[in-house]
Length: 299
Image (tube, rainbow, N blue to C red; front, side, top):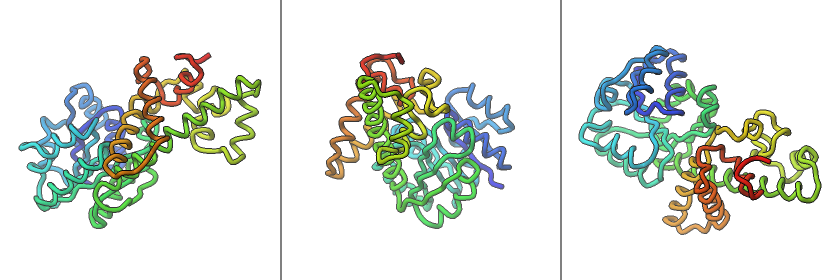
């Protein structure tokens, strides 16, 4: 079992760290919020006084941070991960960030003889708690092989996407599909309402026809057809609209750099931006159906 320094114990990071404890690893965590580290302590983990402490005595360091800005600070600062980690330490960043930052950090790590894997996740808070996350991993083969047994303590599907930054590329492409498809499914259900077609009838037909997709069959945005979907809980978030907007913006930034046309991705980003500006950033992203319908709340 490994000694793991876990930096970033928020809504995703804390349950991920707790699952590592359940898997038998020794976890020493750091977060800027004391309440988060106390929850880790209560679960049997240790508390590190700083990033430097967490990184300097770990076999592996895992980070789960809000954005590329924090990732650069935590890894590249003079007392950060790269400056503090011992030779041979495995470094894994599970934040969802821009591809450029992931590749810059990987290059800086290589200059110190270290390897960083970018390993963003899919599955939301529910997947983090259940230990069923999907990890999309970018980086070298040797580092991936070393990381996989640790990642399996937090996830169900671990995929090596290729070189540095490819984990982030996979994540933002996947979530662009998700954002666009959720809007399309929402538009279809609202149109069905106005044409007098019952929600369940549309679901029964489309979920078994060419219109079926994850946004419909696993996360249907209307109450009833999929009991586990947030639509049945007034859109309490499993994955917030603000997080979806973040990922769609990352996809648009990447598309501009790559010179790739993404008109549907751009429109999805614009719609989620409007939805969040109306005060819905903390609601589940599937609540976009309320915006499509012309209301902020479910009717």
